Length: 124
Image (cartoon, rainbow, N blue to C red; front, top):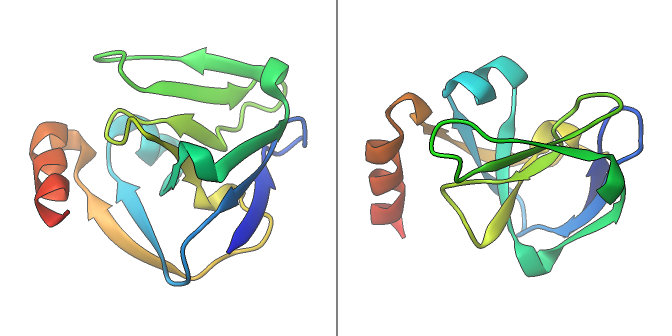
């Protein structure tokens, strides 16, 4: 299923190919996801295309620095980023899609990241 989305001001726009609904999503309770309301849909790099806004993106890293949090320098919205947990995929914010999709939401305990990642890997 092809979807489109982006930031609040419209500078950053993307399209992505998602699996059939319900789309798997992760709800993380780490400090940054909790504060920003980010709801993760993992999209393999080859199924995501940034249409506009490459020059508008600002990068933020914290903790291990492995994740690259990208947000629009104009409106501040993080519509997608490179997660530490899935190095071969973008994490797209379900809240930034143009049209809502039916989600199958799994909780991810980002406050205890190492254990949560091990649990996630055990499911694969």
